Length: 581
Ligand SMILES: Nc1ncnc2c1ncn2[C@@H]1O[C@H](COP(=O)(O)OP(=O)(O)OP(=O)(O)O)[C@@H](O)[C@H]1O
Image (cartoon, rainbow, N blue to C red):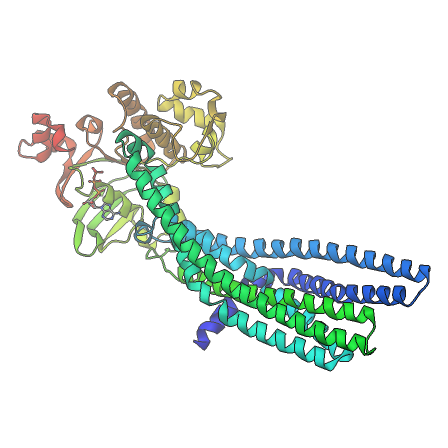
């Protein structure tokens, strides 16, 4: 436990260190503002005493001017403290958000398969927001509140010990009550947050599937689920609010009692001539001022609870290790890369093998067509090649190098993949094609696009390469997106390319046009084409037929086509492409 605490502190200090100068400045400003808050009522006290004692006009004017100056300086300090507090909190938490996002992007697909987008948003942003106040204000507010309390009470002991004793008792009681009672609402507040998270995830899920919802007439059902989720938010929110308000009311009652007791003692001292009218005002004002730092301390206790759970969750996420360990080898032979699968077995979960004992090899520049029924493991094969998952056993080598020994950037520089789902980013067509790489010239974009026969398509876009695309892919048809993805991968000039169903959403004419382009572009690389349509594979050198994760057949396309006993030849003869689908 103590160790946990120590690790947490060291971890926190890592984020606070870069802003330590700002935090010290924040503390100085806050102490300055606390000093002014203590001084201001004393100026009014002197003003009241001067006025009631028949003091001169110039003295009154001087005091009034001093009051104004102190008030303005205090306000300015308040603005500076708020600004600097936000600045520190954003700087530190943005670093943490960045670290979390970078970490998540490196985590393997097994981890991501289990997480919903809503959950990841909550982990990368929600938890961190809970820590933000703690980063910025916790230390500063706690120190500031204690200094203000000590200042008020210390001064009161010099004026009247009984009054100061009542104020001290009230302060101690309130701080104690705050720390104990505030925890009462913590559990129901977290249930309230859970309910609203469920509501948001429902909205996110339904909006993501809006087409299906509308087309299948599911709107009444969705509305019903929505109302039920809203009702849960309302009921849990009301309970959490009640539990937050009750303790607050208790401290207000306690405070009213303290003010009454202090005023009784104060008025009695005034009547007995022990204190002046101005001092009576000062006592009243200082009693009022006690409430503020006590409230702030209570708030900070609550913030600390929130921050603690946020920190635990963030640290837990950061301690998740990816199963994909980076290799060190950077070197790969120039030009098209050879590929070798040696007894490769792979599964997503241990109880269900997806690829079993796959072994084949391709020479540099060769093209392999993979065919097999839906769910037979074709896409899984390409995911294993790109190290999105680790193998259960076996080795994959590209250019003779075991991919687990290769540095991941070296692998991704030389191997490209076009999947069935194309991710578009918010940006221009050019940005999306080059993936924001400004070194790729428009001329080379147009050349690649020309080879793929896409020039007329780009020209038809309202602003050519400058046409703005929105993220998610809604601005392109499925077929257009596929053409787009091909162009993107070919622009990166990879030496080994996997095309996973590159033309499944294109019409026959567009596919034929694309085929010629792909053949042209594949001249300098080794290619794997996963296809449902046999026509797509007319230009490949080798064919592999996969069934239930096993390699049913592998060999030269011409030889397999000529062998009437082969799966491939039988498929060709029967023309039953639908068997593959
Ligand atoms: N992320 C995943 N988690 C768990 N199982 C998966 C995952 N992706 C695929 N599978 C399972 O692995 C098997 C092979 O899937 P894969 O996507 O490789 O098939 P495929 O041959 O490419 O199919 P298709 O032709 O439909 O694209 C299927 O049984 C599928 O249910």
